[in-house]
Amino acid sequence: MKPPRITRNQAVFIIVFLAGAVFANSLLGEFVYDDTPGIVNNVALRSLKFLPKFFTGGLWSFTELRAKDDFLYRPLSLIFGFISYQVWGANPFGYHLVGLLLHALNSALVFFLIRRVLVTEDSLSPFLAAVLFAVHPVHTEAVSWIGGGVDLLLTFFFLSSFLCYLSYVESQRPRILALSLLLFMFSLLTKEVAIVFPLVILACDVIIRRRVNPAPIAVFGVMGAVYFVARGMILGKTLGTLRFSLDGAGHVALFIAEALKLTILPWPLGVYPMPPRSGLFVIVVAVIMLGVFLVLSVKSRACLFSSFWFFVTLGPPLLLAFHSRPIFAERFLYLPTAGLAILLAFALSVLLRKKAGLALAAVVAVTMVFGAATVFAGATWRNDGVFYGRMIKRFPSFAGGYFGLAMYYERKGAIDQSIAAYLNALDRSVTVEDKLSAYDNLGRLCGISGDYDRSIEFYKQALLLEPFNSGSLVGLGNNYWAKKDYQSALRYYEEALAADSENYVAAHNLALLHDQIGNRDKAAFYSAIASRLKKAD
Image (tube, rainbow, N blue to C red; front, side, top):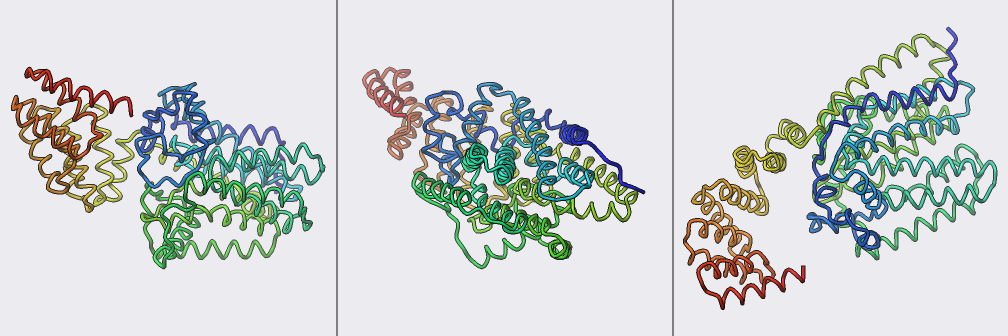
C-alpha cells in the first residue's frame, strides 16, 4: 500500500482541530493550585504601576507566596498574566481558552519544525508525528492547568525563534536573524529553560547542516550569558536553594527514567508537585527507550539532533532534583517532546515505506488511545476539589493534599468539611510549620463557626509550638472578645503586638475594643499605631 499524501493546509487544519478537541474540557476548569495566589489574589496584575517591577523581582514577589524560595525570573510571564487579567479578570475560561489556542499553535509549529529538519519527500510522517504531539496525555498539565501555561508560551517563542533561525541561515537576511533574536529574548524572559537555545541551534548546524555559523551563534550565546548574569544580580541568587548531592543525583536518574517512560507510556500520570515513584517497570521502559534513541540516532542525523533537543531542553528542569524538596512536573516535558517529534517522524517514515497500512492503523489506534487518556486526565484539573482529591488518593500520607482540600472547601463555604480536612492535615503533618498552620487554621475556622472554646484550644496548641506567634495570639483575642471576656481579649492583643510590632490587626482591634469599653485615650493611642502600620503597608 502506498502512503497517502496530505497537503500542508490539510495537515495544519487537522492538527489544530485535534489539539483543540482533546483538550476542550479544559475550558470548564477553574483556578487550581497556585492559580489563586498567582492570578486571582495577585494585586500586581491589576495595575500598570507594577509593570516596571516585573523586571526587578521574582515571579512570586507580588503574591502571598513571596516568602517562598523565589529563584524564578519571568517578567514576560508576568506581563502575559497582566494582559490576560485585564481581558479576562477572574474568569478562568479566558485563561484556558488562551492556553488551548497556544497548544494548537504549538502543535502546528511542531509540524513545520519536522518538515524543516527531517529532509524527506514523505508529507505524511511529519503530520502524524505532530498529531501525536497534539494529543499526547503528558501535555495535560501544561494545557489544562492555567499555571502550566508558561510552558506553552515558552515553547511558542522557542519554536518560532528556531524556525526563524533556519530561515535566516538559508536566506542570510539580517531582519530574520533580528526576529529570531527577539523571539529568543522573549523566551528567556518567559522561562529559564530557554537558556539552552544557543546549544540547540549549534547542534542543528553541526549535526543537520554540517556547517556552523559562528557569528550569529555567538550573538545568541552572549545574549543568554547577559540574561543569566542580570538575572542573578536582580534576584540575588542563581540557583536558589539547590544543593548538589548524591541523593539529588539519584533523583535526576529517577526523573530521566520517568520522563522517558512518559513519552511512550503516559499512564498513570503523576500529581504535581509530588515526585514520581520509582519502580522496575519504569527503569525497564526507560532503558528500552534509550536503546531506541541510540539506534535511531546512529541511523539518522535528524534523530541524533532530536535526541539532543530532548535531553538538553530537559536539563534545566532536572536541576530541581537537587531542591530541598525534589520537584518533577510533566509540563517540563512539553518543550522536549516538541523536538522528540522529529525522531518519531523519522521512525514513522521508515514504517510507512515498509508497511504503510499497518503503520497508519497503529498511529490511528495510538491517537485514539492517547486522545481518550488526555480527556480523562484533563478532568484532574477541573477544580481544586478534584485535584487535591487525586493527590490524596495517590499520596494518602501527604499533608499537603489535605491542606489544599481544606482551602478549597473554605472558598466554597463548606466550613465543616474544611475543618475535617485540616484535622486530617494535622494528623499527617511532620514539620512544626505544617502543624502550626493546621492549628491556626482550625482555630480560625472554629471561631468563624462560633465554636469559641474549641477555637481557643487550637490556638493554645499553636502557642505550645511557637509561644510568641502573633497571629495565634490575635486569634485568642478574637475569641475572648466574642465571649465578652474583654480583659483576656485585651491581654492577648497586647501580647500579639508585643510579639510583632508590625501586626496591624492587633493594633486595630485594640483600638476598637478600647473604644467599645470606653477607654478613649487608649483607643486613640492604638488607633494611631494602626494608622501608621496601614500607611507603611
